[in-house]
Image (cartoon, rainbow over all chains, first blue to last red):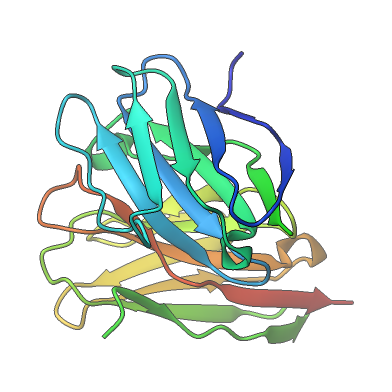
Length: 115
Length: 112
């Protein structure tokens, strides 16, 4: 596909369960971001992958959150032992890379609801 | 001080009005600056990059003041379709390739 693809689009889970969210970036984009957006709030930075560099994990809110990226392709965000405060839209974005090529292309997000 | 700060608004203006949004950032070494637009329940989309010399795209003008660590967006002749949340975005560190941090956004509502 031409754009950033995220799956699932919606996920309902019970408190305490683990969830895995997937992001397929645009082919050739070396940078990949995960953001979280709670209802009515701004985008909260979670993690950033750039090529083969070590990811910037400084935005992950707790050790229940982790993310991986395979080369310059698919990324998965895993949330262990989900809590109700994890309910949010999780947005993935990719870009060509640094400088003025940093236009972010967003996926449609995964709406996570923790009951 | 938060990394990127914006006045949340809302700004309620009539069609045809001129409106300006401000944004401040905390890291003086930041190099990349952008304005994104987010419509309700949609993903953000790039509105424009912000260059050191200032830049204009139609009715939209962006300015950067490095000394004050301040970015602005001016919208002239507001249209109903401009109603959205405007997000200020700044890169985190002293390299253009570091993570992009979003402000919480300023909400604009244009009425007829």
